Image 1: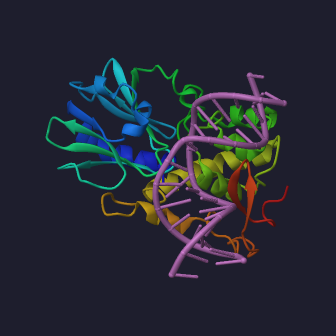
Image 2: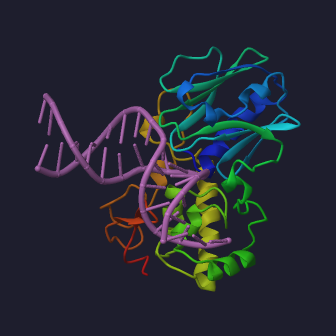
Length: 268
DNA sequence: CACGCCTCCTGTGCGC
DNA sequence: TGCGCACAGGAGGCGT
């Protein structure tokens, strides 16, 4: 679930319910991995001032401190009137209005930690995060320059978070297909780099409009799911015809990740 | 510093 | 039907 559009959807859903609420208690159920819930106790009695997002990270501002949530591969975060006994429940924050913010994470790759506001020294990827793709900070010319100079395959660069924030495996494949760029391409020229810039903005804003891409794993009735799955052109579409040229979509491995592409539209 | 590989976990789906 | 293995939306740490 959790790339930029999915995290942004969660942020928008939670924000009105969290603003101004105080965290009155907490419970970490995941006794085997307490380090993934660093300093959570210090959130007690703090009031939620803002709910923002940076890339795939959700940032809950508590004034001097900040709760940083990363959902990993399988994390979910939702509000409940009474903390439900769902499977893989890892942590619960009790709020002053009697509701509970519940963190559920099957694979335990997610983290939920309290830091000094703006101090991301324990989160190197967040500390070195590239520009937000849907903000004006993501400007075409610097992007063209960085895509020409940076080493590594374009797919690995997208996944690294360093040149642009929030893109994961689904939206990397989708953006590259829309821009007609092979995932293994290096040192993109100006024209392809500009196509990719536009494709990233298009696919992410369309996905947000659809409330993200939700897989069956996460459909358990506790959240409203996104339906961008139906709009995916390559991800998970192995064998189905490319909608531009009808060549069957293939799946390969790039940068250690399953990678979907059209070999005709996206030539090396 | 930059890159590639392995790891952290649990569950599912596939081939044999 | 059962077993074993590969793989899954991410990123941190290590070695080269």
